[in-house]
Length: 202
Image (cartoon, rainbow, N blue to C red):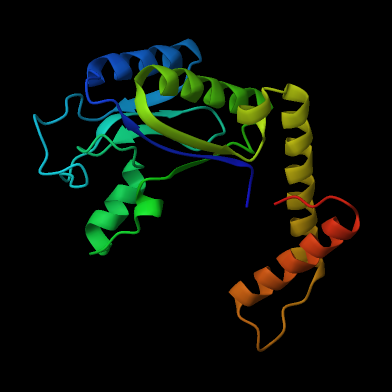
């Protein structure tokens, strides 16, 4: 739970990865974000458009109070979170492609200003460097470019989270109920109350 951005994509075949990384790094330095660079040059070729080698390419950035903004790729030039890739490469023989190739960034604790910056850099890079790019913004800023809409969404998500915390403290777990089932029950109760009050959330 938490307001997030979800994105996926593939770099153009003729894009120089150094140029991409330098653009992202300049943005990170401008806004005083921590960043880390992985491999900076793709291999000459891969076996097919779907295959990849067990290496990560690109850069990851960390705005204050925000999850990592991964601009990292597999050798097939598709975006992939380095942390998710590490999990799949160690534990999954048949990785779920949607999970592997979708990057999720929770911005709720960073606030609207950081959310806007994350969307802005992704919008800029996607237009310049990507052959394919999809983004789903739970703050609706990607679609609307409306700060007012974004602030309202943050307020809504923060209220839901506050209500969830209150619900967990005020509700007693049944003896025969697992912790997972208990949390799900509280979440359903919070959702039902929000819906009844006209705040549907996600």
